[in-house]
Amino acid sequence: MRASRKRLQLLLLFVAGSLIMLGLAPQAHAASYTFTIIPSRTQESNTPGVILALNVTGASVGTTYKFTWTVTDPSGNVKNFANQTVAGSTTFVMSAAYPARFGTNINFVGNYTVSVQQNNPNPR
Image (tube, rainbow, N blue to C red; front, side, top):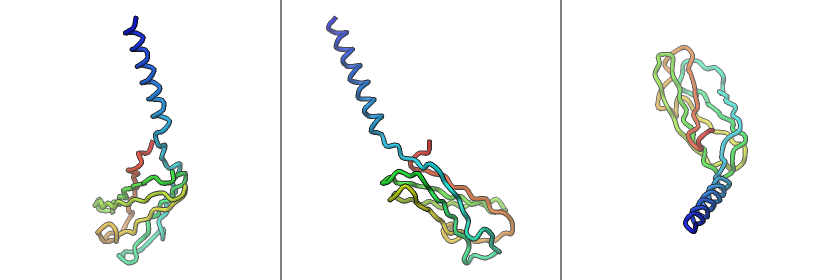
């Protein structure tokens, strides 16, 4: 009987500790994003290129946010750029200059596909 009581106490301690840890785990995430390209169109040139801007709202203050930007040109060539920031408020803007920050040039006429992936904190 004594061994089963000790097991019950350990089980309750484990459950209580787990609940405390769940309550203390940071719930960092961004509630919403708005993506903008400035200017929305450009002609073949490397200067000035375009600014890719991601407006983040609902961020957790003090949390490091990391993003990877991917641009695919009309020929299928893919270039990436990664950046990060620590949220100083619940709203912030991340940006990347294309082609300068991606180590490439604007060589092709056509549509360029842009995607942004949040690497940290893990989006849920």
